[in-house]
Length: 423
Ligand SMILES: [Zn+2]
Image 1 (tube, rainbow, N blue to C red):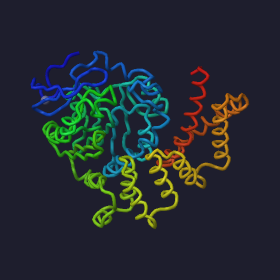
Image 2 (spheres, rainbow, N blue to C red):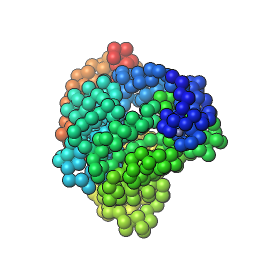
Image 3 (tube, protein in one colour):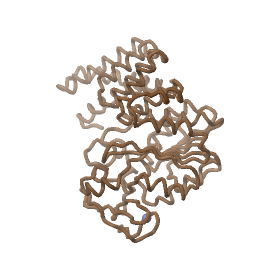
Image 4 (tube, rainbow, N blue to C red):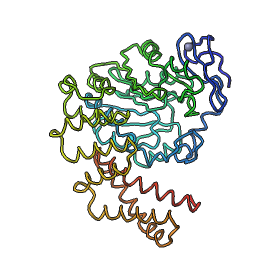
């Protein structure tokens, strides 16, 4: 499918700025400033329909290189912190996640949002069915086709907008489903005009995810989204060179997102200054640290942790430490912190022993296909599954910590199965 007009404003004043490694070109619209693929494979939606997108472990640069369900609870925890910060300003908040995949974020959100509806939609039949099996309110539909009598106060989308081609239809679906004082919150990769000019084909965003169709600058969002939604727009860009990203909020009532905007505006800082500690509560500072660790700002996260030394309990501290380590890729340290924070809280000694034992056996098995170790793993597999179902009964951050540990086990179990070629 050749695209010869801007998919947003219809202009034909286009310039080719880069060629990707899949030989597709990227165009920029000279009028509105949107970047998009010049040629789009006609069947691009097929990427998302199958199980492979969420469970694949190949290296094709399409989909999730790691098994989505296994990394996700911790990966998306910052999102639940961000959204809960807004959710609490509504009395009966209805929330909708676009592209909810297998529902890991919804699981955490549902716990906090007792009075309102927590709903998700996803283009993938496979992923929606997994989410439905978890008891979540999820439809297999896209936002373009989603009509509901209810309106949603919070519509959230993480890394979906860059996958669509018809941006007007996508945003139209959001506009139609947003309540009178609702907010649309999105997280996307962003690009910078100056860097595109400088780097061309070598721009990281153009060469990393081959299923991305649109590329956004901060300016495009600020100007065009304001025109489209006719309400306040807040764009927070986290500058990581050619791997930058944006958290944006479109709000019909900016009082509902004022505190959240404050937190997001601080995320590029390194230390906790006086103004910050004056204007944010301890809880908000704690939330900020968790979100900051997502944006690789572990300096800020650590400084908040020091600042809060006397204000939070030991478990919260250990949890935050675990998050910081996890986001930095220090998985062993993260695990240590999570285990410590869980010791007296949820997992009994027996549970902990089970986790350790299975992990040891899996390592043994992967090393030398030890048959006895495998037998012990198979024996314990059901116990792990039972433990996992307990997660759904837990509350907020504990879900994440326990998931983290159990998911590591699942990951290993899966690797073992793939090893045997029977999955
Ligand atoms: Zn345009």
